[in-house]
Length: 483
Ligand code: NAD
Image (tube, protein in one colour):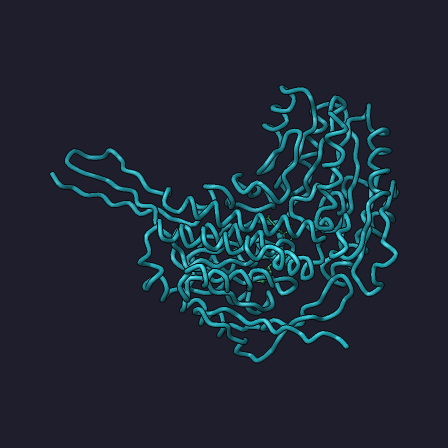
C-alpha cells in the first residue's frame, strides 16, 4: 500500500492555509518518481494576502522589535533547526534527491545562516557625515520594508536561510516563493520560525508555479525589494517585472565555473575537490565546477587520475548516501541527457563515466556523472550550464590562455585556481571575472561569511556575509541645521 500524501500548506499571517484556488501540485520523490506530498498551487490572491500580512507586521509587533530582539529570535530559530536537524535533512534529501550526507550539510548551513544573521542584527548601523556649519547629518540604515524572496529547488534550505536570514535580521517582513520542484524545508522551517518568536506576518511562504505565484510576486506593487535566485532567463523576466514598480532586485543566477589546474598544483589536494565540485548535488549547483582547465604538461596525467575517480563514483537514491543522487525531475533528466548527446555529436568523447548502483529504481531520475574531453569551446555545454554532473576538460598553456578560457563564457560566478606559485595565484585572482575566486580550495555552497554573487550574466548584488545583510537595507539621510 502506498503511503498517504502529506498535504503542505502556505504560511500566511502565521496561519497554515491552502491555496485560494483549491488546487495543488504533486511533490515527486526523484529517487523513484513516486508522489509523496502535495503543495498549494497559489495564485495572485494568495500573494496579495501574504504581502498585506507582511506590511501589517511591519506596523505591528515585528516593526516594534529592537534589533537585539530580532537577533535573539533568529538565534532561537537556528537552535530549533539544529534540534530538528535529522528530520529536516531527511526531508531535504527526499524532496531534492540529494545524498543524505549532503542534505545534512545544507541543514547545518541553514542553521548557521540564522545564527550568523541573528548575531549580526544589532551590529548593523548607519553613520554621520561632517557637513555644513551648525548641522548634524545622520545616515540611517533602514530596512526596505516588504522583501520578496524567489528561490530555486537545488538548495531550498540553504538559499532560504541566506536570503530570509539577512532580510529578517535587517528588520524586513518577508514573502517567500519557493520552487515548485522542492520547497518542503522552507515551509517546515518557517513554521519553526513562529515557535522561535517571529510574529505572524513577518515571514510568509506562498507555494506555487513560477509563472503564477512567482510572476505575481515579482510584479507586486506592494514589495520593496526582490531577492531572486534561479536561472538567468527567469532572472531577466523578474527584473523586468520589478522594474515597472522601481523595486530593487538582487539577482543570483547561473554559472560555468572553471577549475584551473596548473602543472605545479598539489594534485592530491586538487583532484578530489575538482570531482566533488561537479558531483555535489548532481551538478545542479550554480557554482558547480563544470569546466576543468588543465595545463598542457599535466593534461594526460590529470585526465587519467580524474577518470579513475569518476569510475569509482556511485550514483543512487539519496537515502543510500551515494556520491551522486538523482536529478530533480524527469524534465531535468531529459534536459541534461539532451545536452550530453549534443556534446557527443559535436565531437566530445567520454573519458569516464560513473556507475549506477544496481538497486537504483528504474523510475528514478538518474544520470551518472560523466567526464568529457574534446568539446568545442563554442558548444553550449562549454558555454552554458548543463545543471547536471557533466565535467568538460580543456587544456591550456600558461597564465594568459588560462585567463582567456576562464573568462570565455557569459557567466562570472565562481572560479578556482590550483597552483603552488603564490604570485601566479594572485595574478589569476585579479584577472578572472567572477564574484568569488578560490585559491587551492573550493567552497561551492559554503562560506556563510563570504559575500556571494556574480558578475556578467551570473547576476548582481550580493548575499551571504555582512554584505548580504546590508543589501537588505537602504539609506535614509537626515540633515539637521541647528545653528
Ligand atoms: P528557475 O529560474 O526556473 O526558478 C527559480 C524560481 O523562480 C522558482 O521558485 C520558480 O518557481 C520561479 N519562477 C519561474 N518562473 C518565474 C516567473 N516567470 N516569475 C517569477 N518567478 C518565476 O530556476 P531553477 O531551475 O529552479 O534553478 C536553477 C537555476 O538557478 C540555475 O540556473 C542555477 O544556476 C540557478 N541558481 C543560482 C544560484 C546563485 O546563488 N547564483 C543558486 C542556486 C541556483
